[in-house]
Picture (cartoon, rainbow, N blue to C red):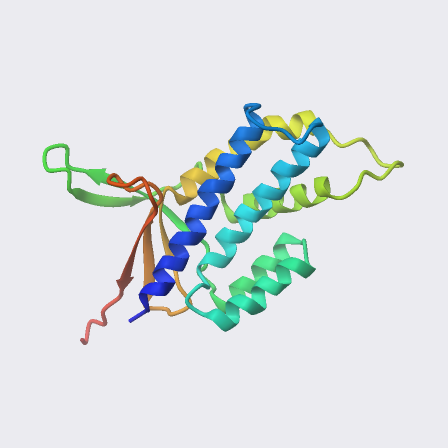
Length: 205
């Protein structure tokens, strides 16, 4: 069975995503800024990329050596497909599976967990957004077309909604094939991330 420290580490990754999302929302609604529109957009880009990195890496928290190896790739490579491929080589099912709970209105107990089929951040979305943010973070080429900052700022809220739908209630497959984290991003009691470890039991057990 997996050590509690790794459950806590996954929860910490998710809490960090929530904090970075809060920072982005503060930039978008004007509660804070980076003095200029361009630098504010770049600051948002950085937070979005950090969130995506946390999504990709979180499933590796129970394997310290592999985590460190893949994490190093993020500092050397800004191409999303290559980064995701390096994570996938270690954990082929790393990408979160979004779901929703069907609650009994009388007892408050969970009756069923249904997979969410649309409206969440897909692997393709991940790649497109990561690379798009990378392009915006690089200095403007004076001979290239001007970057459309206004359009970028308009589309970010839809990205945040997709990320929220992906993570709000999700399952995360760990490197160990028989282990999954079931995650609730906002527990009813404390409002914090709640992570529960599930282990698949063999039919012959």
